[in-house]
Amino acid sequence: MAIFKIEPIAVMTEKGYHAEITGIDSNDSDCIVGTIKGKYPCDVCWDLNGLCRDNESGCNLNTTTDEFLDVKRAASLLLKK
Image 1: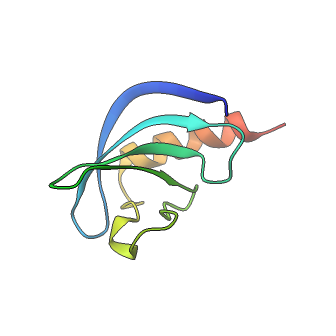
Image 2: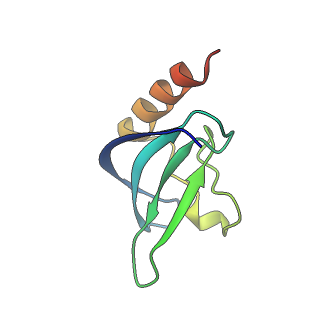
């Protein structure tokens, strides 16, 4: 798995959980890599629509923020073949 590491970007999930985006995986449709913070932190992946694989819908990213939109643009460019 080729993950392009990026400077951690603080974001919020739809349920208000603090999260960080830490990379872009160019070989996976769930290409946004990061961590959900809190009492039980966990590593997660999101797709370009901010949907979090194998987690509750509250873990999906808030997709209206400038931070998310910037990462989405960068990931889209990396995924073009």
